[in-house]
Structures are given as structure tokens and as C-alpha cells.
Amino acid sequence: MSAAVDTPYWMPFTANRDFKKKPRVITGANGHWYTTDDGTRLYDTFSGLWTSGIGHCHPKIVEAVQQQVASLDYCMSFQVTNDKALKLAERVTAMAPEGINHCFFTNSGSEAVDTALKIAIGYHRARGEGNRTRLIGREKGYHGVNFGGMSVGGIVPNRKVFSAVLIPGVDHLRHTLDIERNAFSRGLPEHGVELAEDLARLCLLHDGSNIAAVIVEPVAGSAGVIPPPPGYLQRLREICDEHGILLIFDEVIAAFGRLGHAFGAQRFGVTPDIITTAKGLTNGVIPMGAVLVRDSIYETFMQGPEHMIELFHGYTYSGHPVAAAAGLATIGVYDEEGTFEQAQSLESHFEDLLHSFADHKHVIDVRNYGLMGAIEMAPRDGTPGARGAEAHKKCFWDENIVVRAGMDTLQFSPFLNSNPDEMTQSFEAVRRVMDTLE
Ligand SMILES: Cc1ncc(COP(=O)(O)O)c(C=O)c1O
Image 1: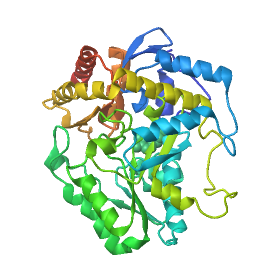
Image 2: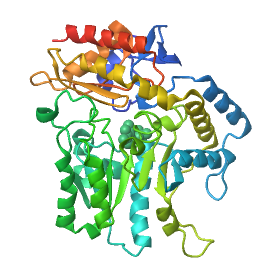
Image 3: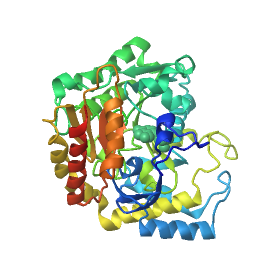
């Protein structure tokens, strides 16, 4: 479909009027390829939306979902549960860092983040520290679009319109993107570990005893792939420990192989108190998120009369049996196919391909870590974002590949089981497009 359309569909995070002039509509997918409504095959350089690491329509997940929907489509999520949710909680916590053995299900990353923030505040209150309500996020952080996640997040356009109604009591660490000192770093950038001291300063300003939690993405994703300087996450951990603050890693992107391990925490060797995740939990097949918490946090909630609810929070679809079945099948594939090892083995090829753009006339930075990558182009004078948007559309229409543009930064999230030749070809296509850009 390339003729202009008038549709009632209000698309998320999309320039709707521009889109409707020439819609890009996908009707099918298989493995690493999409099919559009006019039958064109497109290579997916973004694994869905960081979601579908083992490829689209994986037969094992399709089968599990089909079976589940025909045997238990739904059951009440409060006061009763289903067998698949129980099993999935076990599987996921078994993969988590030591000491993190409890799992609360949500339907998205945004819900996982807001759930985690509520758990953090509720935990301190249950310990008799109800004054600890302050939350710390980071500039350029993306934690979804609900009020909590938006407030601790640091993506300016997402916050701008809602500035007056963001939740109170939130501060931000400075972001760690430093193109001046770190441009074209391969992997973790050399400079910037001192930025972790922002947390120590906020502890001085507010007194650390008032801070409930700090939330960061181990590698910022949506802001354009910003890996942390070495030692930065370790230092946040230390400062949190000094002041009794909970450390939350938002691993909606980083978990399930994107950084070559089950969780980014394991890649960095830093264990947070709470992990939020979603996306790769079900390979994107059925929406689902999760909040994983340390035993001591869960146990703190387990007090008072036993017939009473300990956490007044939950979703109709928490632990949905079809989503949980998709999750179990997905984790089964990760195990059977050695997906995380496959992802690790692709890293250096991916890094080389990305950094081959360092000499391109429009490129001002290239960043990568694990299988997360970004090529940042200079903005055109007076029209930031235009160059990136044009690149996205030209990739789609002229080269039959789907890439993601966040303003003028092209982001890449290759399949964890990519074919290296297809990966190479997709970057050749990106280069052809970039060569045509003004
Ligand atoms: C780190 C992070 N947190 C939260 C979210 C929000 O997830 P969702 O879009 O499923 O609500 C995202 C989405 O990309 C994310 O990358």
C-alpha cells in the first residue's frame, strides 16, 4: 500500500500525517524478513522493536501459543493463577542473578517500570522508612511512557508536554553521552566514570535517607545506544549500598541475549536489587513484562495478617497464560539453540560493520555494545531529525530494509541468530542510502 490513506488508527511514536501520505504496512513475517501488503520482502535490522531476537514466527513459539490459546485462553489473575505463569516465574528467576528469586508479571516495559517504582517505595515503607520516596533517573533514560517511567525518564520530547504533571520528588543523574571525548568508541567508552558521582551529590543534597531508588538502563537504548563508561554501574551500586538505596536496572532491552547474557547485570557483573524487563521475554510474540526482585524485598512485603493482600497492585493480564506460554517457549529456544552464545559470536562482526561508517561524511559518532548499535549523523541545519527520517524511508522504499531512526541516529538491533552475510548486506544497503542523503 503506497497510496495515501485516511485511517482512524492514531499511530504511536509516529509522524502520523507524513505516514499517511505513503503508508508502510507489514502483513507478514518469517525469520528475519517481513512481507509488506504489496508482497515485497524486507530485511528487519531491528528485530522487531528490540523484541524478536530469535526471529519472527519461530515455529516453537507459534506452536506453544496455538496450543495454549486452545486449552486455557485466560483465567483470573487475582486470587487464582495458571500453570504457565508459575512455570515462567521459575524459569526467569533461575536465569536471574543470584538472590533475585521473585517475579511480578506485567504486560509491557512501561508497566514493569511503574510497578518497580511502586515496589521500591512500598518496600521502604514496610521497613519503617516511609520517608524514602525520592526517585532518581538519568537524563536520556527511557523507561516507557506511563507517569512514573516518564518522570524518571530523561527523553525531553516525551516529557515536555507533561512537565507540570510529572510525578514529584524525582531527580536525574547527568547522561553519559560525551561525543567530544568518546566519539567512535568500540564498546564501552573510556571517559565519564566520574558522572556516577552525581548520585553521591544528590545524596548530599537530599540526604540519601530520603531516596528510595535509582533507575538506569545498563546501556541506554532508545536515546541512541549509550553504553556506560567502565566502572560507572559498579560505582552506582556502591553509592546505593552506602545509602540504603535500591538500584533498579531497566533491562527491557538489555535482557535475554541482547548483551550476550540472560541479563545485562551479568554482563557488567553488577547485581541490582530490581530488574525490569519485557520484549525478549516472549520474543515479542505476546505482550508481557516482568519485575524481578531480590528475596529481601519480597520478604519485607510478606508481613501482617496472612489473609491480606501484601501489595495492592496488579493487572488483569498479569501472568496471562498465552503470554506465559510464549515466554516458556522462547526461553526453551534460547536454551536449545544457544542463543546467547550465538549473540556473543556476532558481536565483533556487528561492531566492524557499524564502525565502517566512521568515515562517512554525515556521521559524527558510532556506538555499540553487545548487539546494540547506533550510527549518529549530524543534523541538517534547522531541521533536526529530517536526515534520519529520510534515511528510514529510503531504506524501506529503495532498499527493502527496516531500520529505526531516532532523530538523526540510526539504531540497530540485529537478530541474536543473524546470518552474518545478511547482516553485511543490510549495512551495505544502509550505506547506499546514506550516500544519497543531502
Ligand atoms: C529500557 C526501556 N524501558 C521501558 C520501555 C517501555 O516498554 P513498553 O514499550 O513495552 O511499554 C522500553 C521500550 O522500548 C525500554 O527500552
